[in-house]
Amino acid sequence: MFITLEGIEGCGKTTQIGYIEAFFREQGMTCTITREPGGTPCGEKIRSILLDPQTVGLAPLAELLLYFADRAEHVDALIGPALSRGEAVVSDRFFDATVVYQGYARGLDVDLIEQLHTVLFDNLLPDVTLLLDLDPEIGLARAWRGIGNGERESHESRFEEEDLSFHRKVREGYLERARKDPDRFHIIDASGTETHVRDRILSILRSKLDE
Image (cartoon, rainbow, N blue to C red; front, side):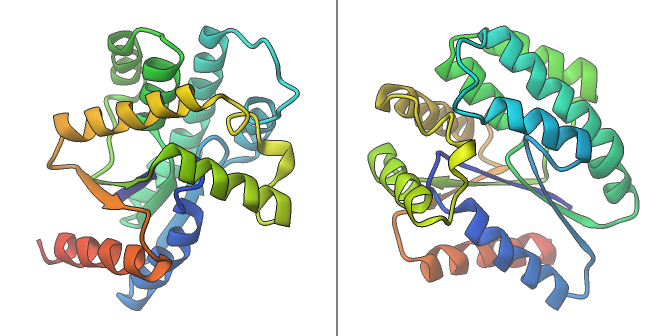
């Protein structure tokens, strides 16, 4: 089973992944936890470029291709082999993030992004996408609070520094994708407590395993 968590900055994805990992281990299933960008040694180097706030003036197309380069290594070296072994794979962001950040928010052609993904990765999509939906103002406030208290990395704040209108486009893009693919997407209100969000996620996963 391939599961992704998506959402704007500060929506709580990283926190919830820990609960998901524990859930699968309780089920006796091997679980691989990963993230994009990153997840592999080469991917982490690409991540350092993409998320560094000092990476300024990067052309949207160059940004897009860096994400695809990261994903090519990620799928080949980690995601594909883990799925072939029958493991559960849980990724903090995947293809949907590319569509909404580089497509809806940066203004690149969404159809082109989807076509590239289909050609390069045989249209590999998650079985389940958990969209942690949150008002961007609340998410950014949480994110900056986390950066201030050391819970989040200050050297990975490039997207947090985008203006509010950018993050509103990201949220709208996610919700649009969820509307188009309701069988895969599950929208979760991330404004609730950590426990409430966790319980909703685990309820969805239990249902999917039962299927």
